[in-house]
Image (tube, rainbow, N blue to C red; front, side):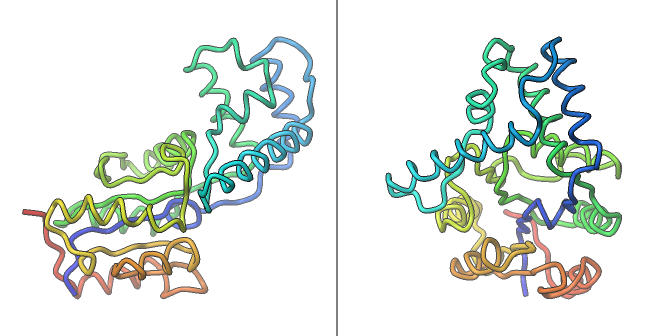
Amino acid sequence: MNIRAVIFDIYGTLLEVSPPTEDAPARWEQLWRDSFTTSPRLALAQFSAACDNIVTREHAHARARGIPFPEVCWPAVATEALPELRGFPVVERDRFLVQQAQLWHTVRMAADTAAILRWLKDRPGLLGIASNAQAYTLRELEKALATHALGMDLFESHLCFWSFEHGFSKPDPHVFQILTARLAGLGISPREILMVGDRFDNDIKPAKAHGWRTWQVGPAGDGNWAGLRETLCGTQLKASP
């Protein structure tokens, strides 16, 4: 097997996702006071419900336009649910949204995940990402990588698909077609691409449909990171010409 590019999913793959901490409602209240200098107009659960309604509406509109797996623009959703954000400069708004996302889940990168990224960094070949994500995902990934003395420069920017930038998400075949075309431009064929993800429906099945090789992490998949490294040790990782 000759692998020249490895494409990673993020949530559930590079980043472990856990429920929010028990103090999330209290942290929301503090975030509101720090941001708006007033008492909260909405509880965290109310804000979440309002966002869910907006997302449901926007998904329905997108599907009516022929987009089967739509992705929303999170700043637009959050600002509609929370008009107080409209007067914020973009940098401050985005800082608020990063902190807000951390109230819905917690993420971390496991040591064995970081270890294989570090190992791949020192080998030939290209690394990329195919993620259903929002802008705050990049901050979460950047922070998690930094805890292991790694950076976003591991990944080729032109081989990173972030769903929020396109308005559609995995498992839409266009996600994989875009990356297949970009890699083809580098002389890399589908059989030389490896998709690493945790979900069969979102990651493995559509990647296989495009002729990619796949590795499903987690209990339902091929195995763990050590197994992937062992498998890749038997391959010929090559750089693009």
